[in-house]
Image 1 (cartoon, rainbow, N blue to C red):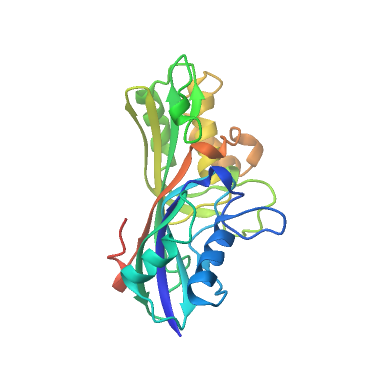
Image 2: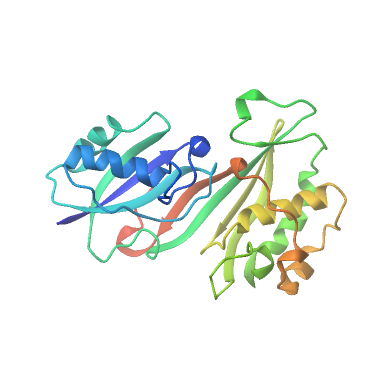
Length: 253
């Protein structure tokens, strides 16, 4: 059996997240169906993350163990011929048996997009939330800088998570604007359940004048989900990059 690393992109609009569910269509299920049609076997697919319903990915890494002779571009082409238009594999490579797409990862980078204009934009309907109030990116960049560093992000973890260790290291974080499109970006060694969306929701509270721009340290120190802002809608979130170290550091978008 050979372990293959598949790197894919997907539009999460039609799916109830990554992980297989009993009564909903997910990306993992659709990919497993395609693999079964190509190889003749229903191989387990291990993903780098669990994305929620409506969340998108520009780089999502997963592995399969297979006896199929197909490799590289041949496997990529065969899978894409059996996948819907909103899921695409763009690279397939062999990896060692000790590689794990989630636990071997050294970090991830997420984007969150906001269409900041008086009128909504139909072209961004499934990929950004709409905010009419003008977002002061300079002010929010000052606030977002307080996310950077090693902190206990328990205040930014959705209720119901079973994770015990809520300490994460944020390497970079900020807000950029291109015309009416505002993008929040954050890179960390790992993320808690709904962490990015709660970070965004807290910044939107600051933008709306509901919180002071320097409130982030006190929210972090509270270690209480109720201290942070609301969870921003899923559709604006994109898993943009997964990072690996050592022999797998060359895995790229």
